[in-house]
Image 1 (cartoon, helix red, strand yellow):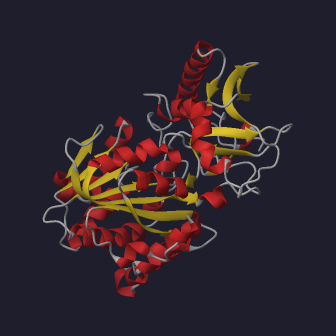
Image 2 (image 1 turned 180 degrees about the vertical axis):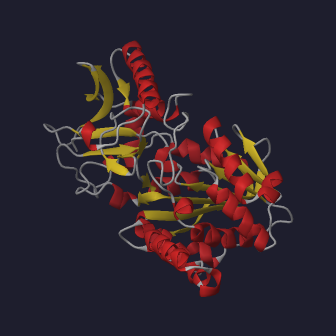
Length: 397
């Protein structure tokens, strides 16, 4: 997709300056790497470079004033339903904890704590793993504003928890922001692939092909060796070559409990369908979606949908049980989302309209309902509530 800068709202001078500084850094790294870096390295820099990357700088990212909106910011109905299911999981323990990975603006953390308090199942501690100082500050402000009496339950982590937890780990739209490697099928030899990386040429960043790394080939082996996939020439897609290690690390944090994953994605057969010839990479700037990852580096989000078959395989290798896989719509319906729509719980006409609009975006197929999948990974003798399971789609993995 060709992007014209004039089509988008111009960033402020400070934002433009930060983007320029990040570009200089990226250019320096490319020059020190013989003129080429992998797309995964580029994506990591534009999203996470301290002080300059998209998730590390100070600009608003989520919500109506940011670049995109997630389910918890869209409607409190999401967190209410999730809170009911987490409460049932926590009943497996005499004292359980909740660990949220990347808590965004802190909206879900605040709403979950309020719902868990209502259900009289407050966790021993609510941990938030957040490496961005800016987002951590925003999360703290949100929780203090919405649930000031519950702030003492919240603790922020810089890295790996000091001890294994019993309870629930949540990753809501986290995996789609992990750096991915990109590949393209050689137009002249359909059986060969090249790795797509990044160069700096003629004063700008560009995509460039390179012989595939051994790590990329290893990650793609289940796809390339399967007779199910026949890619046309020029076919382009992505793979997260570090996802298995990431899942294994989460597994090491949990003594007994559930890892709940909510993210945009497909099973492998859908992810690498021949008709999905340009992959799933998407960029977001001021609620405008496009496909140019070089547009104002550091000022836009870059994400890639998730191969849930790869998550399931990685989970199995890490000692997790894949206990459920469904869509967000099925999860919310199984969690009795209608119960939160009772007229007595909605005080005004504007609130009714807002609630219904949020509900539509959460469950309709053309919105988040079918695009976002929900997977539950468990360790230990955990009774998973029926509400978290929805319609069982594990057979599609």
